[in-house]
Length: 290
Length: 250
Image 1: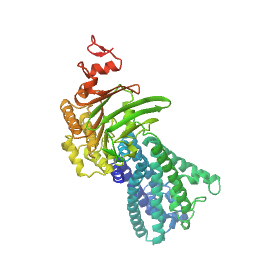
Image 2: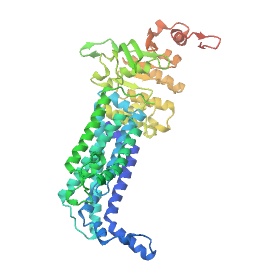
Image 3: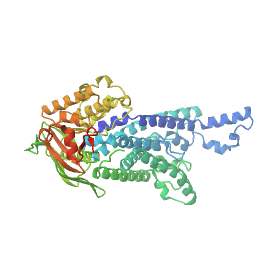
Image 4: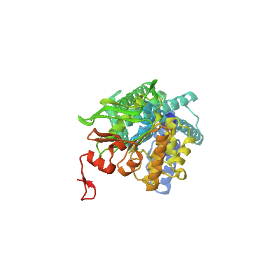
């Protein structure tokens, strides 16, 4: 059953397309982060050619210094495979959730989930096999991204002539927590898709939560001191899970949760959604397509 | 053919099946059996309850009352679900997958060796099209692929919903031969179809459902007279053939 689930993901064109987009976006983001000071210099240089072409020369020395790769926060943001540290929204986590929702939702849309239920009449096991089928490629993709972003970080450090301020243990911790966070988000999204039995609805919910978080979280952080209910929303939890307290306020905004707590709440999201999906799948009739 | 040590005469047994959706009764005490080595036709108008009966038999829907068993066990209780090969109206085909990819997934889910995929593709006459995308297939080729999926795990019971739909005459003859050989080897086929003329040539027994109830069941030769299955079917449903209109339902 698990081999079948892995093959379904492997043969899914939608999953392949989103995986490529995720790879391009996440590696591109890391390249942008490690070359920011050089880009700012280039923009300032552009003003000499075309007067007032950019406003980059208005940046203070302090602002420019904060973009340097000698900052722990920037190194962390470059290394973070979820793409969330320092940017607010964990793009990698959103895309992982979209892949899970697409793969599971399409099984219901095309009716191919029926073949799985015929092969395994204890339908809850199909939910479990699908989760494994999604989690394995996510872990593999996470490992590849960790290597890619690590190499980009080393490249950036060489370009800027700075040393790594993140230790090997800290880097490994960021990557492991990043992969765990991606796995939990994937599981939660797959659970959601099994629960609603529709790719469209599941992706709508994922996109809605991402948009809601990116607007509500900063707003509540401005209005309320400390932890708010918005801090328990999933994509922000991914960002919190990879953050390092030592990395400074720019990557760990006030009110954010410690990594362990963030992962714990993410785990709770995954358990609740997968549990509800398992219950519904096991206890209710398989829907008739169309 | 034993279930928990008890030899069962019936490969498929449906007894007193009741199914309600939102308070509406769609199956009202459906009862019939399909003995080993037979092809049984399940007939009825659209919405009569055929598909719901099959869904309950395959464990996709729960019965409110009664039982539907394969070799003495409900589908969920089968120690090895591969004993049943099923092909539904909903084939679950992905247009971008190749025929081989589609069957490879099914084989992996059922623990069937990959080598069987090419074997079954040859059995249904799709060996040449194994690497073609399903989206380019004709309806008949899709039906053949559905049959291939049902045959993949060497089942003892086949449950086929409209398998002849879209098949050309040559393929209909092929399917007829395949089903008859399957039954002759001791297998059991439960078949739904609206193609009465073809059904008459392949089935041993009939079950006619209308309004969620069995209105006729028995061996083909006992039920159908010299005027054929179509006349019997219309008569049993209370739609008397209109001779002036050329045999259509009045």
